[in-house]
Length: 214
Image (cartoon, rainbow, N blue to C red; front, side, top):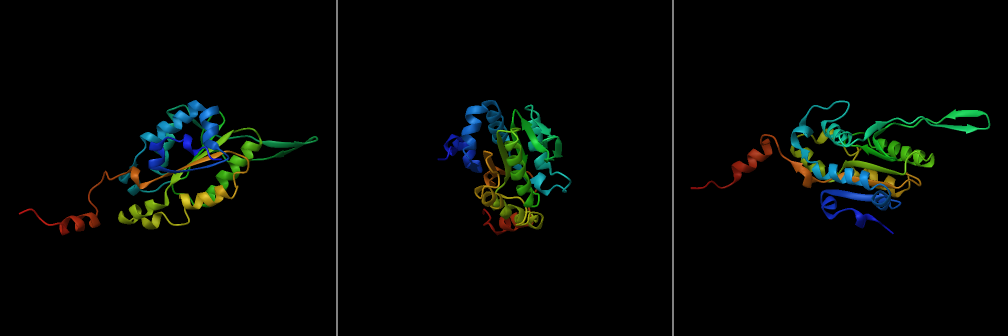
């Protein structure tokens, strides 16, 4: 049984949403404050052309802005120190840090990494859940359909098919890569795109082809 009906309609109109192990139900009932934070950030977000076209770096402006929106609400990047003890022996069990963390809710933002980063995130959620460090995981990524916008802006080669978009995430999620950890995923749809820049060559050509008023 799915609990996706608990995700508000306006969010589902702007994001592709998929869950694993009733994550929406876990968030709404056990972590209502964190759930309100997530909904607030998602509702306020717009995908700006200027940030898509900006020069790339270690972390995109889009990811930085989403991070900042959660940090403003009290979330923080989190590193976990984990180990397994067997009799008198201790074995280090390192995990990757998560982008945003609050009250046992872990959230990752994957805008344009290589798609194996999804494997890393899901495995990290699985391990941290098994260690009782988190109760639910969230991934925010981009919708595959955004590629049409990237091509229009001349940025198609920067967002290849082997990078992080929802059609690379969902098979991994549905295949159980997150183990027992409830996981909720959101993929940014083209509906959120805002063209805040000058006209592209394609847009100028389209405008020139329109009939002129006499």
